[in-house]
Image 1 (cartoon, rainbow, N blue to C red):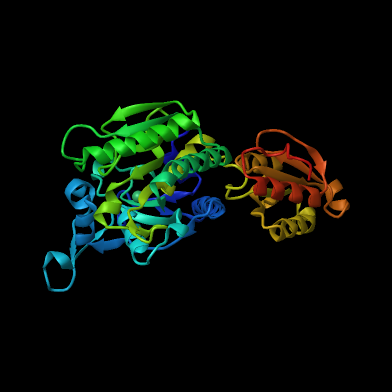
Image 2: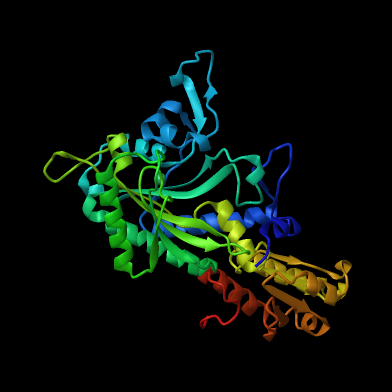
Length: 415
Ligand SMILES: [Zn+2]
């Protein structure tokens, strides 16, 4: 494993500037490609699983967080409120949101819902803010602005276990596609102290359902006290960094508290109002932490579908430029991220070494160019050399690997 902060700078993925501030990284073009692909992947997986996406503002009135309970239980981690206008009454203060849940509860509440619409799955990849002390900030893992892959499923009590279990399956599939390894699953329970909302019966019900989810899916887990959210227990999927330090990437929660606080309801088959359950879940957690982990896990050699550059074309000499440009054009028309590195960038050996993180390299020499750019000599990042492959076949193979996701580079199923 590698230090994502060092690699992030070396590979021009992200950086920080003291004038923007600690814990507020910006993304350079190559990093933005990785992030964009990751976000699109998640949105696609969510659409397939029946989620619908919303956008909500990163600010809300202080009163909103008083209702949700964040103000009482979580304000140490929140930025101070901002006064709007010259009316200094509390109701006119806004805060950078510490989570997306309250906004989603309000979006749900804004329309009447019948039991037929449930489970209603609402997703958003949105910003939230945490007032971390500057001493602990660094890279993409400890930041003050977090972009969370979040979702809330509003459902009946009978549907909650299935929805939570489906969320765990989505997490599993995403980890396989991204090459992420979970080190353990944790059932996070409340600990001592006033950090948690008091309602022992709701805590017990939610904990029993989460145990049912975990037991039913056959996943080994440990119950740990003191790691719950302030409003309920959760399942945390833990990953480890390069020195084995654990962090939570993905979470699944079953929540009875927020639906009460926001007085949410749906109309049941009996025509009466009923209280829905909220399942909070995040597949890859924050994009910051997910990309940091991907950088460390893969040492910058991203799976081909995430790689900033997927194919580097290496004409041996100036004379093969025309053939290289034809292949570049072909690759781009297939939607691939390809570029040419010509002799002006050094010897062929130096250019091959410089492309060590690029999944595919296509070397075009005199022989290849004579055949109108076909075939090309293919090298894979992992050292394999599949040999001479027609340019059209190479481009089709790469496109198939991109579409299939996963981490394999060449042994593709038959095209
Ligand atoms: Zn939530």
